Length: 297
Image 1: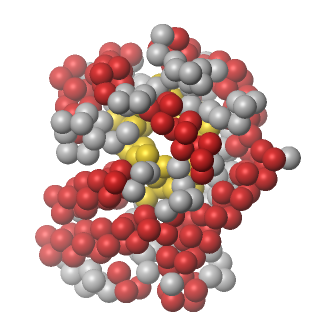
Image 2 (image 1 turned 135 degrees about the vertical axis):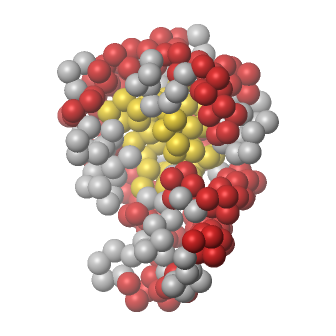
């Protein structure tokens, strides 16, 4: 298996650094999907909502085909629907992989020992139910919590994106005062012996577009790492804010947008209800063009 870092480099060179989050906010889906679970409760609601989410997700994948390098399903939106939701997630991950999209599973797992091994099998390992190409992880429990995932990178060519400096408003409380820099140091060390032809390794970092003032230093501290960049679009980050996360060769960053691509913006509601696929594709193409222009300039 070609290592994840190399597969991502090929995808980004081909399509650009576009990652689309699959975040099925039930109250934001097109009306004809919402009607499938409106007024239902309990297990009946979960079954109907999961079916709608799966159909919606498959249509989103069709809409972004050829535009995005990767998709990022947020597992919480699926797990809240119980077993039917998890089954929908499995089906969407399988479909995305069959379409040639890389899958960044946004799970933010983090635990130790056999629990970490279980999380790894559930999310990343090819013997498990999802077998994603990469997964987001929390490093708060220390390096031990990440070892099963590192082993999976080595054995199966998978990738990781470890939380370093996130885009949420209260991240400073836990990530400031040297914490982010310490995690960045671990990531850099892990990639030293794992980097491929593009001098990029499998252990990536999450650095939000909303903290551009810190991104340059973190990029310098992790020269061999892919950086997953949330916060672009609906959270207020601009294309220019993502620039410090890239290397000078234009590689090294994967920019994610979820709500900004998936759902209607002000003034677009009628178009969204009439043909949400067309609008999703329009949003994705606009994002790709904005990032391409940024690097062309």
